[in-house]
Length: 125
Image 1: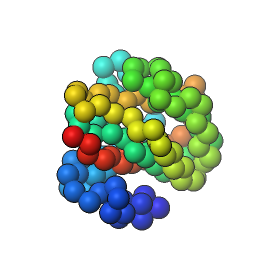
Image 2: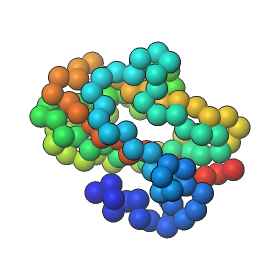
Image 3: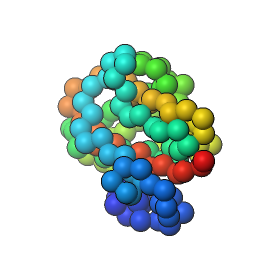
């Protein structure tokens, strides 16, 4: 599913950052981001347009995303069913043209949860 979404010209026409595709891949998230250790760092001049979660675990997950460890100021209580793909479009765009920033992930429970995360970017600067 993520491969199909990364082919769209609208998102990845040019100026991609990670591997030349406009996608940052985080292969296996199984725990909360620690302070100072973000899930992903977004470079200046990019916005996050969409986040795709591929859940290969056996338990449902509920996650938060924030600009600091444990925060939920980007996404609050996103339900991700087990063994499923969840696409979370950020229609308002999350980003900055002036400075890079970090995104942290957290959940109340990571038991039997394993997420591959694809962060789709758009160059705006």
